[in-house]
Image (cartoon, rainbow, N blue to C red; front, top):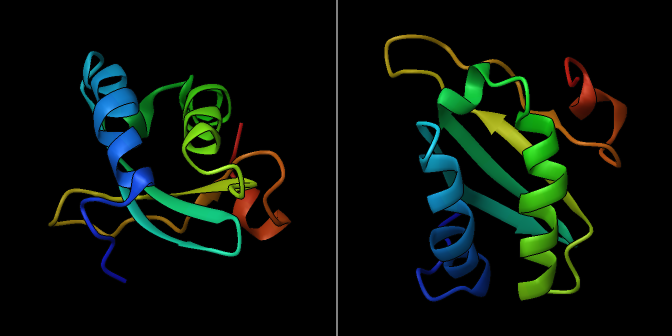
Length: 104
């Protein structure tokens, strides 16, 4: 799914969230959204960060909800370097159990 660059969620991730995660060497991208569920990718230092779930719940979700009040959930899909396989998506509280497996 291609998300337009003028999409409000893309804008809030680029202007509010991305600079925050970049400070610690992380990157974030919007992968898609459907019926209130937004899927993002976390890359770089975010993959090993012990605070990644808190950042998703306490920074990413409220920022996205401010841009679009219909957002109810954020699911994270990890992107590994191109030469390795990425693990399945890991969600935050409120996600279905299969999406939360491995979440802290």
